[in-house]
Amino acid sequence: MNSAAADSTGRDEADGRLLLVDDDEELATMLQEYLEPEGFAVFWAGDGPKALERLEDTTFDLIILDVMMPGMNGFEVLRRIRAERDTPVLMLTARGDDVDRIVGLEIGADDYLAKPFNPRELVARLRAVLRRTRPAAAETGRLSAGSIALDLRTRQATRGGRELRLTGTEFQLLGLLVSAAGEVVSKETISREVLGRRLQPWDRSVDTHISNLRGKLTGDERGENPIRNIRGVGYTLVPDEPDA
Image (cartoon, rainbow, N blue to C red; front, side):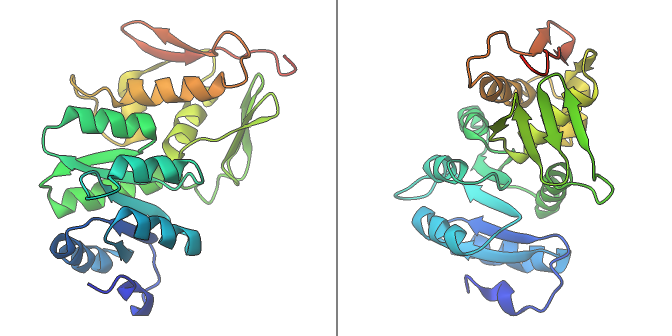
């Protein structure tokens, strides 16, 4: 498979530039052939070091990252990605391996999909991730609650003037909580509006993303966290004083 084949397609990249990181060249070729007619410009890296090298030279809208790769596995690649950038990442995990999914989300993955998968589901997941991590054209303003402020154009978030390094999903989640500050937002609503899917009884994704976000909000040791867990119902953001 030509790792830069998408450069010469001439398509308008309506759905964005996508980096596929997987050591299975046959699968990568199949996905490229499926995704390009769907509007994605697909680039391929066969291992973690090649992916990181490509990320230094090219800006991508989305990354598909396989967990099981020889040498540098997907978790280590994701850690290095998150140390530098907030590009949305969808991880491919082994079927039924809850540990892989949980670890990936804790490190900063935006979504996951178990192998083997239906390519149509992959496309739906990719577009859902892009919808919740890209600012809508009409979103030109700001959101704020207490000391927390979000710029919807630049997708930057701050608390008390301190920049928060959020993933795309975390930014969307914080935006939802800020827009409903003082009100309880159910897990069902968070799953639907932020993750793009119905909440399932076994799915701990919402709790994992909330935990990651809470950790980043208190990174400056400001004290009590503004996100409160309302047991059995959902979460609420309690604004603090803007100048606290």
